[in-house]
Length: 121
Image (cartoon, rainbow, N blue to C red; front, side, top):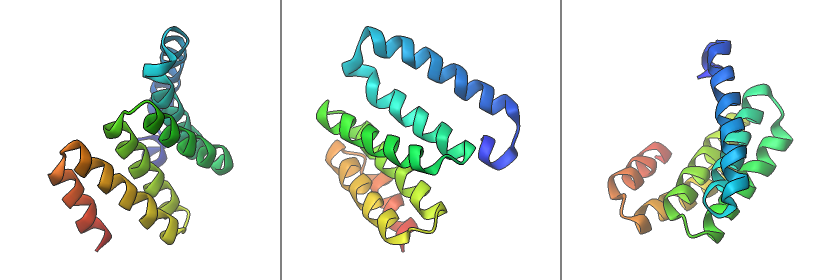
């Protein structure tokens, strides 16, 4: 990943994925909006635009929830939780990880939910 390696290969791949997702979102906002927002949040996290990343993580969670993509709501909460943890906001991170865990459990991904539980402990 770009944040760890600073290898621009990964940044280029991310930008290309965002461009593709923008096209798909224009075709079917219902299916792709939350994914575009999550990719964009990760991009902004990677370049250090933390305010924009925070906003887009929140919007991705909200869009996933509104469109009843419980598994994608889980992923968005989880990644937002890791983002907040990296920024030193442990309480917010725990809240987001709890939301992710609940979504994973609702979706039936019990092992994944247990993994998050173990990470928090």
